[in-house]
Image (cartoon, rainbow, N blue to C red; front, side, top):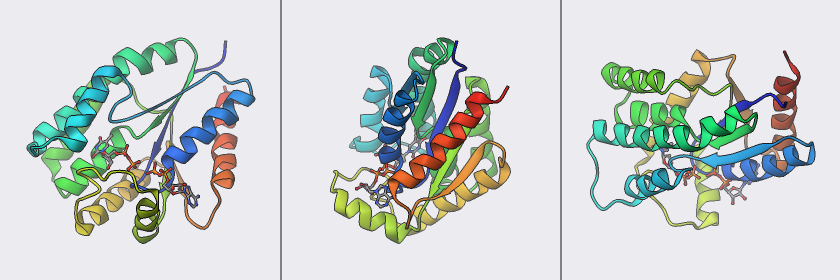
Length: 212
Ligand SMILES: Nc1ncnc2c1ncn2[C@@H]1O[C@H](COP(=O)(O)OP(=O)(O)O)[C@@H](O)[C@H]1O
Ligand SMILES: Cc1cn([C@H]2C[C@H](O)[C@@H](COP(=O)(O)OP(=O)(O)O)O2)c(=O)[nH]c1=O
């Protein structure tokens, strides 16, 4: 049976994660790999309901409640979708995961406050499922903002946050990458075509699937 692998895509808004998710689905399928692509917040019916609250809810949640709600969605997604797929030997690729909670809630909202980072780490440890491999797509915020404006999708609570918030988020992702060099592969996501980025990611995934 094919070896299972849990891969996550991370980075700020507009760096090209959704584009890569689609390209990876077809590239891996054409190599005969059984693959499931999914996203957070969301990915299971209950978690998609919570996504609406998190991104478009009328009333802002307190910092702790926002973290718990992201994890409530994540626990359902893991229990109902991700774990069953991995147990069946599927390669699961998820657009955002706990690194996003660390970057957005831990660094963006709470500015690296130690107790907040501890809470996120504790909820992740109890979840019991870490990604095997993470691709952090990196592009300057100005480039990403222009792409988002051109994409024209409705803006959510996070996209509407100020630039100081987004700078803290990007600093958070950099810190996570520095702390987890084996798991997190940094990818330059500007001035490079989506197809070239896709080839790099596919190469890395194939290496992981082929290694013991
Ligand atoms: N490597 C790239 N170079 C230029 N534009 C890109 C690249 N990757 C994606 N885009 C474009 O940027 C926009 C945002 O990409 P998207 O995949 O939706 O980002 P994300 O999911 O990270 O928010 C889309 O319009 C997409 O076509
Ligand atoms: C998974 C997750 C996402 N988020 C935020 C990041 C994004 O702004 C938003 C998800 O929006 P989404 O549209 O999926 O991402 P993108 O704009 O990159 O295509 O939720 C958190 O704040 N914490 C989390 O744990």
